[in-house]
Image (cartoon, rainbow, N blue to C red):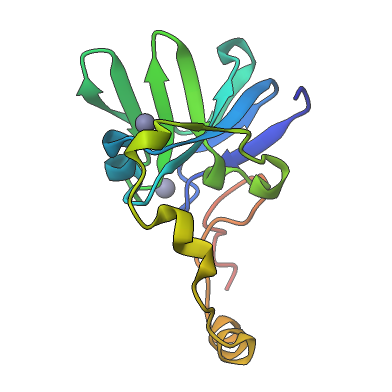
Length: 155
Ligand SMILES: [Zn+2]
Ligand SMILES: [Zn+2]
């Protein structure tokens, strides 16, 4: 994949632009579960020569001698997995994650016992969800680059 992909954290303090992505994956290892606070980590490798931090920088936590994990220190969004092998970006942090479909699973043997059944669960009624969604006032950074965030109050 070699077009421009942008993204960033939930609060907008950290933004990136990646122009060369590798293979998207999900990792089931225990350390990725912890970093993301989730069932697995969706990550895509990015060519570092074509990766620009356009606003702020991730804060790094060294989770083992060879690995650093990046996140926004204002809102906590997980952003990177960094090792000697390069940098990987959290797929959910992209402005258009729907364009980055995982192609492979890593540490599949370590997956949570119920993970294969997750999408068999019933879902909440669409009506209830639409009402809830309509009532949300979002302060989340929008899914595109901005000159300034949050916007200055013009009043
Ligand atoms: Zn943030
Ligand atoms: Zn992992």
